[in-house]
Length: 353
Image (cartoon, rainbow, N blue to C red):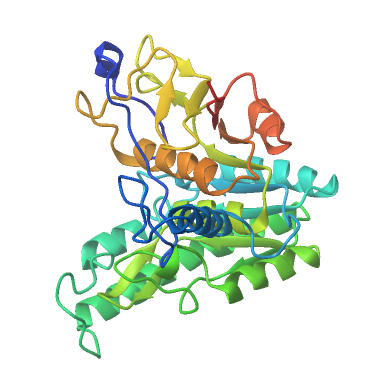
C-alpha cells in the first residue's frame, strides 16, 4: 500500500480521459443549473452564482484566520511498520523520520503529524468488518458482539502503534500530543458530516499548535450515524488538517522514493518527479504516463494517496505543493522544509492556460 507504483501497462495506455476528482460543494450552497440559472429571474442568477462562490470559498478556507501550521506530514504505514508482518514496527524508518522531524521542530517549523496503521489495526478491522458497520441496515443498539469486539481490538491496535510513534517523536524532542478521533469525531455513511471537521476539533488542534505542541493524529474507529461504526482514515485527516490549519505544504513519507511507472523493484521502473493537478476538476496529469482509468486501474495505496494529494490541492488553497518522499532521505529533508526535492514526487496545481 505504501509502495506507490503505477502498473507497468500504464505506459502503453492511450491518453484519453484522466482520473478525475471533483470538489464537494458545501451543504446547502446554491447550485446553478446547466444554463446558469438558479431558479430566479433577472439579477437573481448573478446573486445566486456569487453566493455559491462565496460558500465554496468558505468551505475551502481555514476557520481560524491566519495559518497555524507550516507543514502537515503523513508518516505512511510502511514508514512506521513492516506491513507484511503482523503488528511489527519498521524501527529504522520510523526513527529516521522522527529524527528529521525533530530537527525541523528545532528550526521553529510548525507541524501537524498523521501516521498510517500499516500492520496495526487493518487486520482486526478486516476480520470483523468494522469499516462496513451494519451495512445498509440501520444500526440497532447495542451493536452485535462481532462489531463490538472488532471495534475494541482495532482501536487497541492503532493506539498501540500511536504510542510507539509518539515515543519515537519524544525521543527527538518533538512535543507530540495525540488527538484520538473516537468518540469526538463521527461520520455518516463513512463521510464527515458537512464535509469537514467539527469546529471544536479544528479549534482544539489550532490551540495545541499555538502553545507549541505538535498534534499527532491516526486513522481510527469512529461512530457512524448510518451504520453504527466506520473507519476514518489518515488520508481524510491529511486533507482536513491542511485546510483547517492553512498549511503551506503537505508531505507523504513512505518507504520508496515517490511514485513510479512500475513497482520500484521491477527493471526499468522510473520515478515520476512531477504530477500536475487541475485546480478546478482535480484531474491528474502525469508526464509520460497515462492516468486513463478505462485502460488501467490505479489500485490500492497509490490510488488513495494520489486522490488524497489531489484533494489537498483542491480543498486547501494555502498548500503550494504536495510531496511524496522516502523516510529519512535527503529528499524528505528538503520536502519537509517546503522545497521541491530532486529525488521524489511533487504534485502541484496545473498553471492556467
